[in-house]
Amino acid sequence: MKQFIVMLLLSFFLVANQLSYGFNNPVKNSLANREMVIKNLLVGVKSDNYGLRTSSAFLLGEFQADESVIELLGMLHKEESDDARILAALSLLKIEDARGIYAIKQAVRFDKSERVRKICEKFYHYYLEKIKS
Image (cartoon, rainbow, N blue to C red; front, side, top):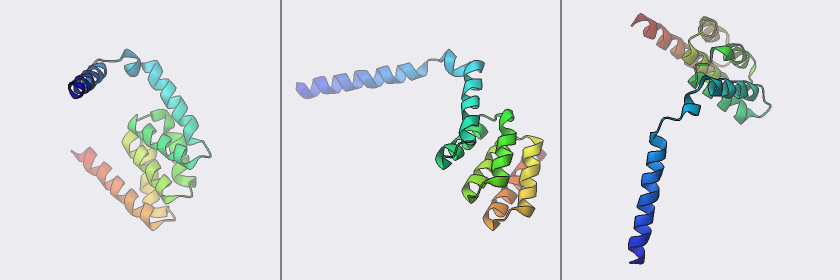
């Protein structure tokens, strides 16, 4: 009997949890919320904390935040870590701003790391294929 009650409670909580995520949240979709998130991510990109900087750069690309292109260009040019530069290039690719695409193209030729050059080349070729179709 005790096991049945525990299973019933667990089932209730799982169903309630699924239902709560099923509804549209107007705060999640609001423009003001997006602007606040992007503003905070732009602060994160300028942080001294490597993890915060890179995760903020990634999320800016996911949000396709046009207003972040300048900061991401700075990351692509000035970051010491290959991974951070690759992440900045990926975010610039997702945003699809002409300045970012041009920077990726230039990174293919001029980046100090062969790894970054090769990955940026793949990003650039992906972009060219995408605009052809």
